[in-house]
Image 1 (cartoon, rainbow, N blue to C red):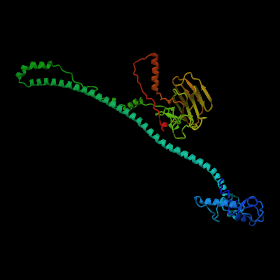
Image 2 (image 1 turned 90 degrees about the vertical axis):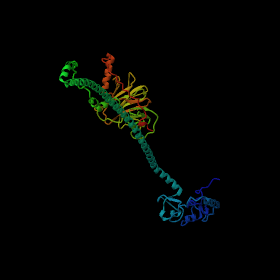
Image 3 (image 1 turned 135 degrees about the vertical axis):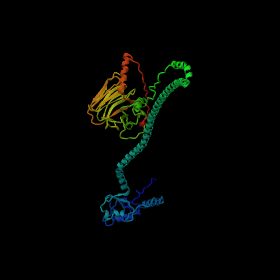
Image 4 (image 1 turned 30 degrees about the horizontal axis):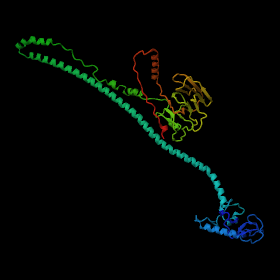
Length: 500
């Protein structure tokens, strides 16, 4: 047998479980007291539900419904109590109705009072369901906003943790760099002190030899002078008897040249101390490198991995990084750490064996969280084809005779010109002419595991050496020269953008 709900057994007038129900001629049932209250003061005896006229003023009891209601009430009383139901504060009745005009729960007595005359009512459960749905609709924007706030807070917590990782990683890199510099200075100090000690030893030995020779000469001269002085102190007869022999000994002794002070005997302090810090700095420059563009890890796409010196980038496994505004989330791209709004700037990029790359410049306002439709001026390579892209025109296919390994980017903001060339062959690749109205940043996009790297800046001295080598290759070496080899270690990978 199907279960009967309280709504099925509720009087249509009081909306409570039937008490002494009677059945009207139209087959509708109503509590006897509710029916008498409904008919009171009315000329026509009508059904409260369908308004049909009753054939009798004393309708019979609905015993079956009465027994069913009593059984339902007994079962309901046996259930665990969930707390007393709220009652009307004016009439002490259960709040079974909801006044749509006053927007408050009321009892049956309240419905018939003057306060709620001609008001609209709904059963409490229907009104609650309707208003819950309305509240849910009003609540939806707040729930969505709360979700956004929680997401931002989660990202802030993640950012705070990433800041700690960045600081620790950067500190270790700083210490490593200074350790290398300290080691170089210590080795340089040791070498210079060693040279000083060697010069001291050489000149000390020289002075010892000089002193030893002077001692021998002094001893010989002293013996001769002493012997002659003894002859001079002898008696006249004895002196005259030995005079010829004494004069012969003195005259036969060759006169030595006067001893001279040794030139250059002192330590060459000027050699060791003169321009010491400058000489060390010039030598240190051979050990350090300089790149005109440093990449910004905070703008790197999560799938890009930077080299420790922040000059190279390659595609790698996606990392968990903060979703900060500066970071690219759509394209695997990265910007330089410094932007340009005037002047002339140039840097070289080694694309190597990467099969899908783009290099050039991007405006500060370039979209980073979605597909870029504007704000970039680049030259790229993909699917075996070279192209130039700009916001002002359709992509331009570039015909290249040889595969590019390096690209030189020349940016002249004063002239509004951006050009690309091959630094090895000096061949021009492409030139953009545009009036740039905002700050521009070096831009790299790499979809390959092979790295794309900013190349160290070549000095004028390096250019001269290259020209000298070219001449020697054509004409042969004109004079002996010393070959200096400077070793640069391979870039290590896993920089700040890679901190997990």
